[in-house]
Each structure stands twice: as C-alpha cells, then as structure tokens.
Length: 159
Image (cartoon, rainbow, N blue to C red):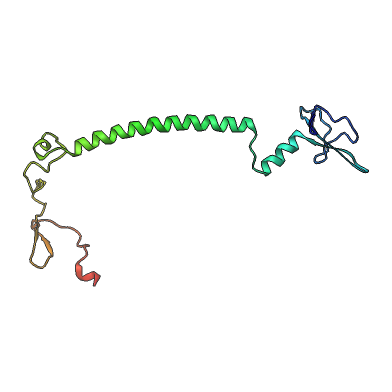
C-alpha cells in the first residue's frame, strides 16, 4: 500500500486543498500524502496545484509531452524529406555548372563562350561612347545639339 493516495474528493477535515482552498466539484483530483498537521487537519493537494508545482519545476505533463513529441516526429520526417529534395537540386545545379566551354554555347543564358568580349551598344545619336584616357578618367562624346543639366560630380569634388 502506497502512502500517497489519489482521491476524487477530500474525505477528512478540512476537506480542501492546502494551496488553493478548493473542495473539488470541477473534475480535479486530490492527493492525500497521509499527513496531518495539528490544528489544521489532513493535508491535501489538488491536481491543479500539483500541475502548477510540476510546471514550476519544469516537468511536462504526459499529454503535453506526447503532443510535442508527435509534432517533433512530424517535423523531423518533413525535414528529412526536404533534405533529400535539396540534395537532388544541388546535384542538378552542380551538373549544370560543371558544363564544359563547348557545351556553354548551348545555353542562351551563358554568353561567356560566344567569343564576344564587348557588350552590345544601344543605338541612337544622343548616346555617347565612353573611352578611357591615360589618366584613368573617362570622357563622353555627346552630340552638339544635346542640352541638359550639368549636375555630374567630378573627381576633384571629393578631394
């Protein structure tokens, strides 16, 4: 016989939980530790107060643990599935990036194998061509009929 008993309702005086003072009636159980205190009576703790004490001690109720564990298992399975999918995507990308220069002309997005070192220049008479000078500065040739703001910064502005 255990010294701890679980009761549906307190049977001895004072007949209430020592912490909250509840006498039951709301589906709570009472725990009798078999202890009596002079001038007080039998010491009972209700199941609600015991749960509160256990949570303060960082114990998890079984139903909460079961829900958390099931959620963890579901997330772990999904994580493993996503890891397999990611590996297959990485493998495909690695194969695409490993293509030889001979195969690169087959891919329209990759212009590096076309042999052209210059980009296409837009057509139009107002567009200037930038040329590098020996001093590292660039200058633009403009048509003489272009009028506009001269709000461009020069290198000397920042010295």
